[in-house]
Image 1 (cartoon, helix red, strand yellow):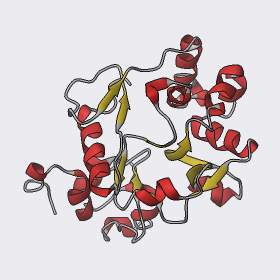
Image 2: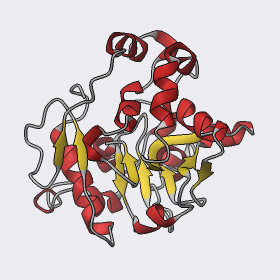
Image 3: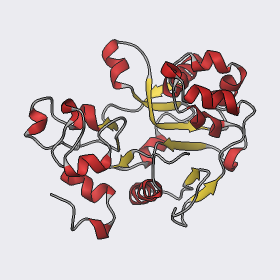
Amino acid sequence: WGDKFPAYYVNRLYAGVKRHMDRPFRFVCFTENAEDIRSEVEIQPLPVVPFEDEMVTAMTTGKRRGAWRKLTIFKPGEGNLSGPCLQMDLDVVVSGPLGPLFDYMPGKVCMGQDWLEKRRGRPGGHGSVIRLDVDLHSYLYSDFAADLQGSIAYKGEQRYTSMTALKHGDLEYFPEGWICSFKRQAIPYFPLNFVLKPDLPDNCRVMCFHGTPKMEEALVGDCPKLRYRTRPAPWLRDLWLDENEKDWMPV
């Protein structure tokens, strides 16, 4: 929703999923603007919820901010979704086989362990990639709808999602290294990030570009924050760019 991510983010994510999926799949995009999205993508409207105004306020207010609208697609019946689904943010790049993400710990809500929470010794998953079963885990929506203010108090939809799944006995973490953070696991530590190129970990299935730098910055070696300034990531050219763009991007 909104205008933060252009349509090519959807198109390139679809291309990455298609390259790395070993079974038939539906690729669904919930959006209010389908312009320029490739025809293979199934478009669904943004879910209509009775607490729209409160949700928008929460998404734009101080420390309560979070992508709370993501939770509305768990509403029973939305998009005719059924069974195991992989929810993916648009600022991720598929870098390895996705089939194992569907097969791992069936019946559970699976997320990559959040890097900051792990360092703090606390439970918590990262919300860029979530494998869930919409028939089993509709409580992610119903608990949110039943206690909007209590849910928003988690200060972020990924913490709400992981803690709610934990409360229901369903939270599991994907194996270490499957879900990676570009700024935390690919960029060398400061000041080596000015000299060494970022790595793609061997077992990485999905690389997350949460915060900064985003993919465009990682391609050319740029970031407004010195800690996350990066040399160009050559492997990103093959994983994210369209074929006709690879010739003019820097190596």
